[in-house]
Image (cartoon, rainbow, N blue to C red; front, side, top):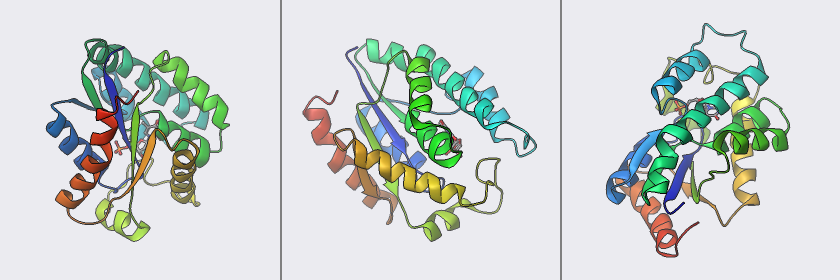
Length: 203
Ligand code: TMP
């Protein structure tokens, strides 16, 4: 595979979707997201985020996220990488590790194995973790919560701690950036962190 895969990760309300779009535009890259980067993924996304589906079991949630990722890689990501292009994705496997493992409590190595199987080995070259204080994320979220945003009991704190642990464990791949400030300020920070890695031939 000749291309480069860049993933944005972080909790809800960190501004990662805005920043993923800005970076993709600047790079002329393919912009996509998880869950929901394909038509099939859109149906999975609706299912997993619908607050009416409270009975969804943790393992079923993990498998649905992995199914979304498998379809996303097969249909969107791998063809672009094979053609030597750049893909910027708003969430990838890091979200499964943070949400389904650190958040839900499923074993980390099992969730990682599931994701690697789903992607047939496709893994991001660069992961950008945007970090904002809880109060800022909360204010950006608003009142309408989807099924994941609505989970209580310290879930989102465990997810945030999980993202930090994942980044600390793999500092060559992950960059942690301050997500506070204007969109332009954060976009400049993202560019300053990502551009040198692309020049260095991130892979
Ligand atoms: P989004 O609205 O930021 O795109 O997020 C979709 C939700 O799905 C968000 O709460 C994170 C969650 N999610 C997981 O729990 N596991 C995953 O693997 C992915 C990709 C997303």
